[in-house]
Length: 257
Length: 374
Ligand SMILES: Cc1ncc(C[n+]2csc(CCOP(=O)(O)OP(=O)(O)O)c2C)c(N)n1
Ligand code: SF4
Image (tube, rainbow over all chains, first blue to last red; front, side, top):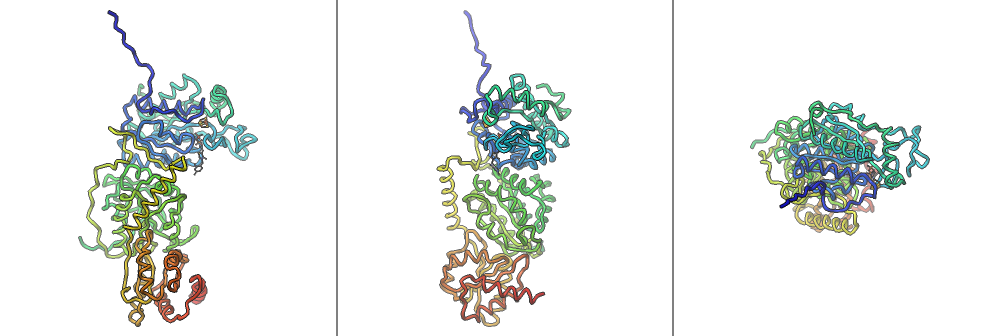
């Protein structure tokens, strides 16, 4: 007699709800969500995790994650996460924020969460644009890039240059793990997942503030096809936002995940 | 328990600790800073959370986060700081989580000054943040009443899942008075069923102020309104002094009400039948009691440390039934008992009150007074 066993190699993480997301086709928000959900599953954290959703396209992130969630005011997710983590230090607390949310209106909150060494994890989606409000310039918009509020292209003379959050946050003593990854292809998605894992490991080990910046696509507001948008990430964004490990606490450096 | 000599801000902060506050998030600002400093000294050794936030914006959003966990949480600030908190206050109201916010009010608008004022009446009582919501507002008039108000504020906040503002002017934050603190309350272990704490053995809890479909937001607005109606029915608090046979009713809250009560004592000695109605809850306002008193007294004198903000609410309730006059000091000036006594006497002698807006006559009297003081 021949016996066969089927091995499940791909399934919906328990940390994910069984609903379709509202994200546009080709948007990598969904990819980022899935990576976070997989990591939380693998680490067995779902029942003690509290997520903090931002204001931006991922405002409804709580509909897709199967875990306790709150929804912050625009840019204030790190403050809200601080408020939660300080009264529930044994819970896992993470924020999920876009670049307008984190690097513009919420610049003070993200900086000071890192400065205090808040033991939280931040997933930072850098898509170089304000997605939700219809494609205005973000602090991360590339020089010369056309958006609805920089219709002639971002003029660095008047609007400044794109801000590099991973580099900035890596200079802060309270940071334990600060890296930039990209979601533009399978190899980079795998690396992104590993980084998300390490960021949560940092929190579970009480090492302090951790952030993974993920270069992400917005085909809708970039007015590109899904594939063109992924190419834009690799060809245009990566040169401005170099991928890499900007700060890795020694405890994590030796960790094999 | 014995009475101790306590400074307002310290006493209020300690009262919050005794009432079981588990987190304080704040930012320094005169004249409320001692509140934060007391928390910084006391909370860590009790194993409770204290964070000096980077701004009042961050502080209130930290409060918002902790409020979502169902823990007792608060902040204390003063006028310009409370303005910055309005964003978070609106989100807290929209999410229907409990929080206590203390405002030690100072002179304004703008940077104003650090002297005692009641100029935030509108901002506090009418909401201040965006959207349809109704905060509960307590306005104690002594250190002891402040201590009691803090404990009450937490109970009300939790009972109604509401914002509770405790507002006092800078006098009360800074002054020292004998008062008694309550014993330390044990912190409850159970987590409210709506709170976020990790979805262990239950469905996920989601706390948000978004209702993207207008129909859903309307249902939420209606729920908040109906809850407010309950609060109006059940939670009105006020104090009275010598109103039984009063012909002139003085109405003032906080320090203004307290100064008025000394003036009323003196007026009685001069044979003037004056009495005091001092709202303790500015929201809900003791409207029903005011309507009753309107049938009894002949005249009303409203005394405030602002330009007549509560006056507007009182005029709406009294609806021209009896004449109302006004006396206010602004900008951080506290009226003296003699000034209010003079006003009571003037009202008693004034046979023809009649300006449509009681402020009109007051403005010229105040201008004279100010030029005389110079
Ligand atoms: C206080 C406040 N200001 C402005 C807005 C409007 N707004 C909503 S989302 C958004 C930008 C979001 O962009 P980003 O954070 O980059 O996220 P994305 O939508 O691209 O994922 C803005 C400006 C708001 N909701 N609240
Ligand atoms: S607008 Fe852009 S960021 Fe938002 S869901 Fe669509 S593609 Fe994604």
